[in-house]
Image (cartoon, rainbow, N blue to C red; front, side):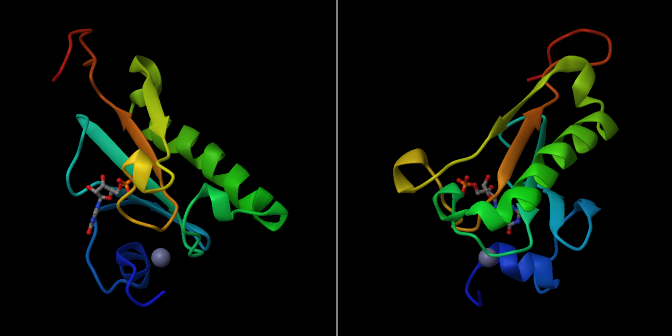
Length: 116
Ligand code: 5GP
Ligand code: ZN
């Protein structure tokens, strides 16, 4: 979609700090982080929200969940715990209408203390 910011990032028209990319998914650091570590996992296919997924997207969505796990492991979030958030629709606070999974964590340091 031409006026979609995430489609532009996927096409390389807007820069982003990538943590993972393959033919169907990209993972980037959020530009305005709401946690010490805030990653967005984004399907390359333009789907506006979870309300638009269908049976044909089963592998894509399942792959994103598995990717959330490996990205969390690679960033060390599996040790401290993390949360996954998907906003759906304006009433949820969704601002970018291209499906994305927020991976939020890093509040606990390796030493066990809290990091704000
Ligand atoms: P939403 O509110 O739609 O669930 O979340 C959209 C997220 O995209 C926000 O956390 C926002 O900070 C992030 N975001 C918006 N524009 C950009 C951008 O150009 N680059 C990156 N990396 N993140 C963005
Ligand atoms: Zn898009």
